[in-house]
Length: 304
Length: 309
Image 1 (cartoon, rainbow over the protein chains, first blue to last red):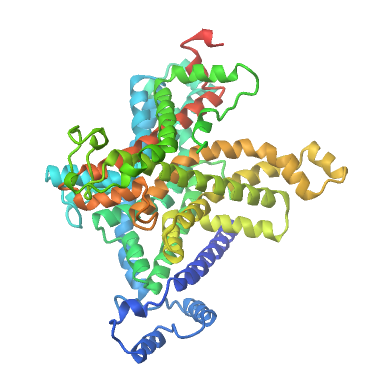
Image 2: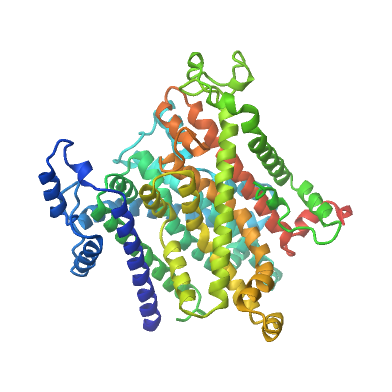
């Protein structure tokens, strides 16, 4: 178990370091930030001082070396835009995304399990057909477009929900709905597929033959054995949920990590870009380990 | 462009009569039939559209600015309305279709080729670069693709070529892992040992003996992946880091209309609907293909008409 965790952790640290290296050199290629942060008529001396302050006057390999050394000291650099610690900026935005993603994932997972199980209980029945079309539509809908149409209908047209921002529950409705679409659609299909396989297996015949009610057979026996692949897919989707968060946050003006990321890429705020990537990648890594552990809890056959 | 019809023939006819049987299965599922017809029409529109309506799509008509849809006064080209510069939306949708599908097809082909080749190498050899390839794929997989694509596109500058490269890179690990898994199994087979003992080089074994057996699997994945790539491209173009004006795709058209939601909803609505219908059709067809390919589920499409055999 500990051995397994150690190996997983070392792989992840290598991945994260590789990612940070890649992003470091990519962001340095985008150009000189002093052009964005200083007034147009600033003197060459002022530009040089700015570059010196942020260590941009040194050769890129020295910059990279300094960055790695700072990383070891848990110094993640200073945001050029907000003049404070970059990791602080990233950690401030992260909980906003986490809340959004957590609620969306929880809702879509529980809804998908119920809908998928009911659909598989009577394949090709009316409910199954409706559920299949709805889930396929959810999986194929372009989220940015659904977000815009939702704003058009509920905020501009009916005026019942706010267009963007944060606040009470009414600010959560549209972002959560848009974020749920794809995970819900894909999960319903996975639940339905694994349920169909489970329901065709011999132990279900036994359960039916001994006269158990249909409800108990579907939800008690078949569903429990179908949950493992569902959790695997849900874990993969959680990584993809950040993609959705980027879109949702930028359309609805939600102050999360996705919006921060886009803003800092465009403003060449290098330290913040790297910190957001570090935070996101670490969160995904922890999530993956949690999912592996959950596997061992749910299925007694799994041992590490 | 041919990647779309390949969904229909994913389980390609090996002996005569299979194609006909497949068509019978397709007829049994009305939704899949509708999806197939829509996609065929879409591909035709994307191939012929720019040639027929290319001029109308870029012609400014300030008299028709923000014209509402469903009116035939200005001619049938304006039936879906016009955008803020008075350009009719219907021809723009058709031209946008050829750009959207073209970019997606190029990205899918590129990622299938690159991912497949790297997967073959990673599966066949045990040397250090096999591990480097796999860790590289892990890095790409473990991070949200959209964020990575945003950084790369912002660095390299948004252009069609870079867009294709970025989309291809983010989808590559899927092909790479599948190809590697298949090669791991295939390389232990007798025909590989036979080829090796007859003195065939590694490159020859991989490319002439193993690759042909891996390609069908990769083709199937690419058909399913097509919808994902269309959505990714639209999202990037929507965020402004995809295709740049005067060129446009459906995603870019939605972005253009975003500012005029309250006054002219149709500018953003139609292109989004086009994306949705395309990806939905692709997903319906691939779900149908899964049912046909699965011997345990196929009877659901057979039962209704026994004469199909």
